[in-house]
Length: 441
Image (cartoon, rainbow, N blue to C red; front, side, top):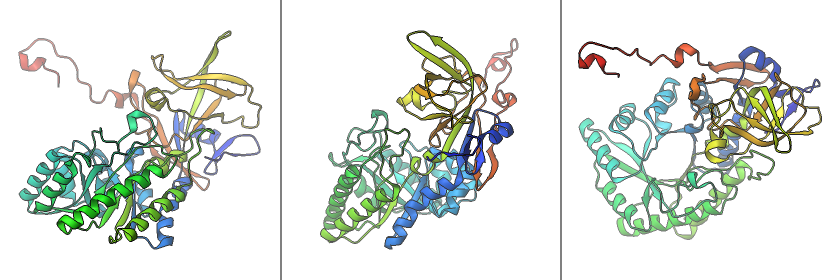
């Protein structure tokens, strides 16, 4: 994201300087620039609108789910992708329009599916044969119907970290096209009395910087759609091409603009529709990271400095893998700045260490900063996606607060955990008494 600095050399986010935010809310602190969230959402929505192409842009809420975030997504005319009861519950608590909610997941439970059916959400993306049978049973019990998308794996490998590849043939997600799995699943859905299959879904990976993978997947989906039209007379109303659009974490990253991704997908769907004589389906996409990733900044306070002559200098901060596990999990890279000394020369190299009791709790290995002293404020950029969502209480650290800033105003949207809340589910150990009284639940 772009850095805005006031005349005192202090970083500003959404028109609010970080000194004010740190004093008001403490650190570690997640700060979201709501204006940037809106800008990212509109880059997708308005691109489709300008071309007059029917589309749904569904925010993938796994990137960052909270009541306030879901309400902003609603204001920006987004649909919503949820993958659990918790995410669905959050959406319902936020008052999000239920018909614009889509549910994902590779192992949806009966309770999750029942909650989705009870809420009358817009669509369930079916992922496996077990789920098809389970959903059919629930729909029969309730004498109702549900629109579904069939998730397929088109065999396209995105050039990303192995842990976040999802579109290749060997995947826990979806029905494989090559083996005929997708054909069998599609036939069972056509025979269903409760499920109305409105189209196909695929997702080829995450943090993708080019469009070729998306275009190849689109062609493969049109091939199977044409086959099913010839064999069954079926015409898909919806083609969901997933998400995975890359963002800039560091200066080394060079993603496309968000509207370039949208235009490329739109152009390919139109081309395939025309050349294959297939009715133009409604295009759905599912950006998550691309909506919130570069809108987030995490603020830390600098602590101890450990210099190992001839090796490196460690600079510890008051957070780490509890508020951002991605560097340890994915070797994710970030940029960092001395947030209240933005005008000063950056001449020292530090290894930014978290405070967890783990050698692997390192946020950034080679950060160039001014000379840092304990108490300085540090800002790590583009932490809006999967920071809070994957946060944890390792070492029993409280989860950080989340603040939204926009047009010079700031508001707390998730408060910092207290120590009482960390132990709120703990029970005392009981000794003596009969066997039942000794059990821990």
